[in-house]
Length: 275
Image: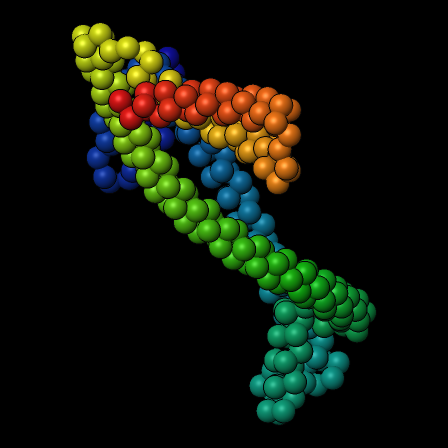
């Protein structure tokens, strides 16, 4: 714990420089976290230092190569950087820029050709990728169009459903109101019927004067009227004959008695209905 705390204090002092070290709660968890940060920072600093040394070494190598190339140009060809014409300097600068863009180590043809070929392949791959992306984009646009149409249809269906629900709700509410009205009228009619039945019971009304009894009497009267018609037609042939004193008298008397009985019964029923 003490060793970790000393390492943390050293790391914080180096990292903060002249600024004061922030106050923090000293406990096992805090010290462990700061210790891990200090170790990771030291590892990263070492890696960075190694990378800087490598860059310095490569820079020194490049400087040595540049001096060597200048000496070769000066001694072998008799050219110096200051002795180049402006077009030649421009060409050299363009060559160097191309080499840097292509990422080659030198400006020899053996380095440029593979780099150019690689760049050409990258361009072809990029074109193929663009073509594939265009096809995917077209497919996505087609799907998007179908999705928008489907969304529009779904929205119309939703609006129609909401409208139908509103209409159905209004109809249901109206039916409930009608049902309440019918229930109220039914209770009212039941009460009125009970009151009427109580009134009839209190007056000791004869059941023969009920509506059903009167309807039965009316039906019976109609039946008797229909029975009179064939009897009347049955008498018609005898009215045209020259009567024989004995037989005609008997038939006439029988018909008269039957007709009288029917008339009496009909008269009784009519009197009863009038009462």
